[in-house]
Length: 617
Image (cartoon, rainbow, N blue to C red; front, side, top):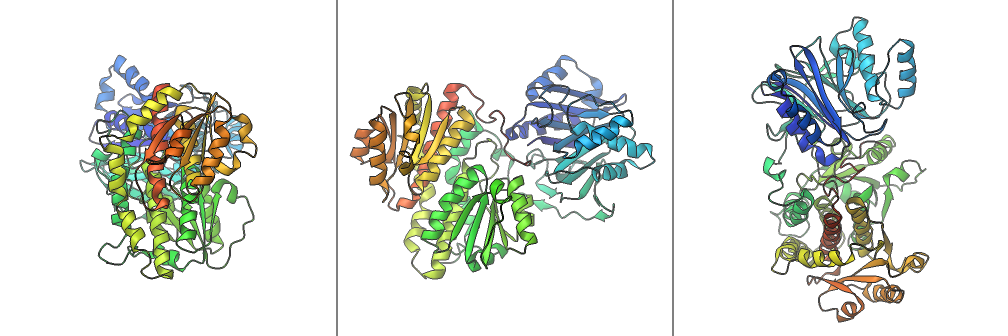
């Protein structure tokens, strides 16, 4: 959710903070601010709204102390406690203590009550500010700055991370983690960087350390130190090297990150296939060996737990895993599953699916099942993320950094991973039966690239359609089989970035109630590729067309019947294996949502009220 950057070193701190916060804008936020050390103490510049407002404030009031500062912290806030105002924006001050915070303090009412009795008068409506007074109280009692942060942190409940400065201890920043991620790196020029994500760090170094829950980081011009939150004992950090490059984070000439990432899907598929498969073997679907492969191949049943777009990819994964892999698969929302009394069969494996690897509800389920000795797998796009460290084994997608809040390439690389799992399990049951499927899968990146970038690229067609339906009241997306979760994903994308009411339905369910909504003001997007569900889907299309809806048909280029029934038609590329149609279908619904959002003038990459990584419940 919120973004954090802290820096101590030799570079101009405010420049590092602002550049870092810009790297974190994709997470979604409604206010922002920076704090930096000066000879006159710690100064704070903050405002509601976007980062540009803080930059404008600083530009209007040039300050030599600011430009010479080499120590500071910055924050982008997504409001939970208190409105998105300047007062509620981070950083917060409590006496000499200045802090930023990611997460929620669940026992903030009790803490606030105690602090009020002690005579403190918090200025903001946030739970975050209260932590500063807890630290201040510990220092008043004679504790060191670092120990004060540790002791204060142990008094709060909830998934949180704090990064703290103190005017009496210049050149030192302390970070503590219990839930919300924190990433640490040494600056090659001296000092260190602390952030809620690796993005702000990559332009300085690729060697990072992901703090574990219950760890405290102390950064200073001398470097870094990690301590146990509980005991204060020193911990030796195991740094990892990320395989992301800075140029992957830039827009590369595209008007929005989301569009860039849609067009990056073919290369993301190539990277995921190459990294996940043992390409030195001639047999199809040989997964590169690691602990997760053994857990997968020995499972008798899989339970996929996810949220949002990852849930829809898991639904498609279920079709393939059961069809090809001949293994029972359950799919559930993590936010629902964690509060149910679930029953898992013997040798069932729980799979937590999360593009960020930090999704709070998914993590909660994974941890609870681990306590019950259920084998767990993770599927994520981020090495070093919490899920990757806590799952019994982890599969990684290789989408690279995804800056747009709306998932695109992380979705299709999850699909690619499920397809590889299904193929590997098929080979286990029917040796040599998957060669044709394997060859078709390996051709997918080329097919998708041609579809997106060819002379008759699909985006131009979709843009034309979008201009003609942009003023409609609402959208229904319908499909059957694997196209049904794509319909759900298409509706989600439209709601996420264009703020247009949309619903996704299994086509056969439309007549069981939702068809009452169909009239001339509605658009129905019919996903009807050449598969064995097509005839039934066309029957459902006839039902909605009779009620006056505008029809956008998406199907085989030679499907004259579907063309005749549709007011607008988007042709899919020729694909022999019907199951693989979901990949171009995903591109179609992504582009339709993107073009409608552009026409509506919304913030495509940072839609309102949303964040890339949902690290609170």
